[in-house]
Image (cartoon, rainbow, N blue to C red):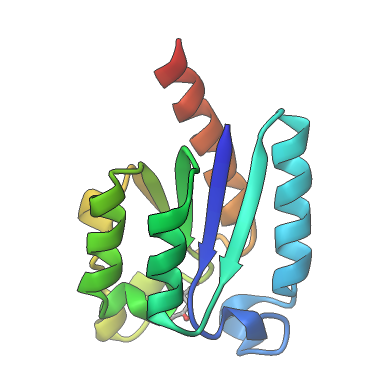
Length: 145
Ligand code: DQA
């Protein structure tokens, strides 16, 4: 299986950015661990992080992945275009947030992704990505059998 991991704006700053909300791990550490987890399961993981909505949309449109794990970051609360890209390529996806968005400002309580996601994981820090990858692989195995 091929998994595409998509990380939205400002997630390149993980490790130094508001550690109370987002923890101390860098994005590189998180992605490296996820790559290993995928490889151990016989899957491959590709990754894009961008601060530009169009780059994220282009990557999703061009991807040959079977499944998308996405932390849309601030675009969660704003981007119809990114939602439409995922619907347009009809790929199943899981939405991940490091922080518990429901325990924060009210503008973070709405998501343009949750109602069309396979599932949503939030508030569990970097572990959320690991759980999402486990769930994605289980989903794909179920679908293939
Ligand atoms: C985030 C939550 C968003 O509200 C915020 O804009 C982010 C990160 C998270 O992972 O907790 O940039 O998606």
